[in-house]
Length: 246
Image (cartoon, rainbow, N blue to C red; front, side):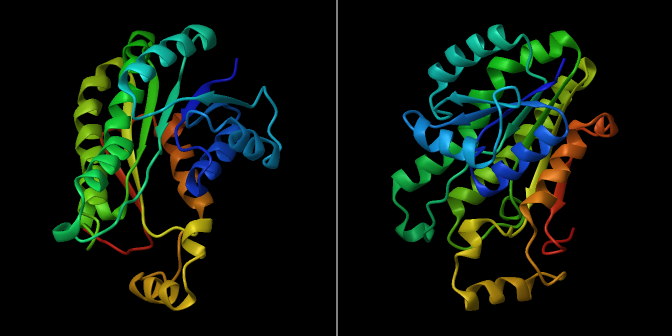
């Protein structure tokens, strides 16, 4: 029987790479897509040449607590188990705090942080009862160091780290690990579409002199959910080329 991994934000640059990596690792991936976006999700599914044994498209509004509770309970019943959760859904609504609208704050907190509760909580007890499970939350270097114009995003991504440490303590005796991957600047289509001079400015700040590849981030997730990562919990794995060293 294939192990099953639920991935939110599965269509994005990093999410796609994680989905492909876990499929290659032999997992059956439950790839969530936002309510009403089936055609877009199906286009991604076909573009990646997945089959239905490898990937199941699953409609879910990760900001809707009630919907997540209902739909994930049904999913658990249908699939029998969820072995891995990767909370990767995220948005940005950048702006200086002095000018930030309350809506920009709330949307980022809802999508990037509250979604972690909404998606993990309905599945966590079953993982503990089974005595095995992996939760990986995709944070950011900016959740560790902060970033000008991103008080909302930095707060959400830092919150994910605190959440993960606390949940790791709760899951440890039941064989459930909870970890964080905190990427730095990554060469997703969105980032690579930036003006060349802006990209060069970013690379100049990174000791390794380049962006991460989405595959490098995905490989980190792959390691943490594998048997090799079984004794690691409550940790934050930084994949940032030395951009922010403790």
